[in-house]
Length: 224
Image (tube, rainbow, N blue to C red; front, side, top):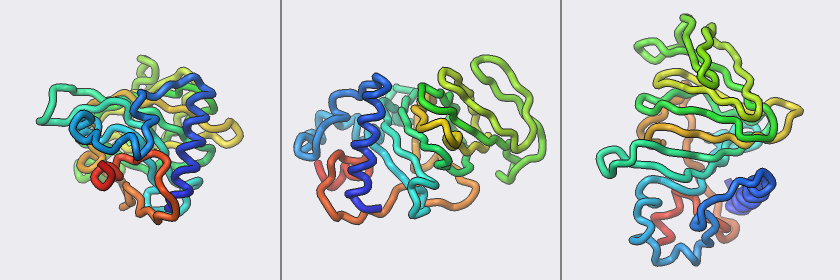
């Protein structure tokens, strides 16, 4: 992806957050210049992968298959005591986050506002294939028995609890607008805990056609 495209998407995300009265921490608005020299005092942020994150999952087509998010808080297994994480995400109409599960992380996905969030769910077999078995999920604390491949619609205010090894993909419902999506979970580790059913790229290769507007989590090593 081009850095200019990433910059424009972050600026659009900031405007969308503001329209929904969702406020990022102060450091989420730091420029690259403000990050200089902060490596030590902001070590928890850097070490735990907190901040701006954007991916097209290797598709080369962000609008079709991609995600922009901000990790607000996160722990790190074996390093600190914090056992939880929180993210805010923007999901566009028909923009897919592809089918995946997590070996360690259980998470709640929350529609915080905007359009409707669509999810498709499938249980995993022991060898991580798709299971044809039905399964239970909790939507706002109410248990639902679902068949393999069932689709769930989360309207604003609704949430779903996704346990470990439950395959899921999600996208914004067509005609309903962008969705402000929250995630509250156990510790998040995108380097070791994502099992995508089809191989995808997690962090994009970036063509540096202009200076960064905000640093992404994968920018930290070269800019602090």
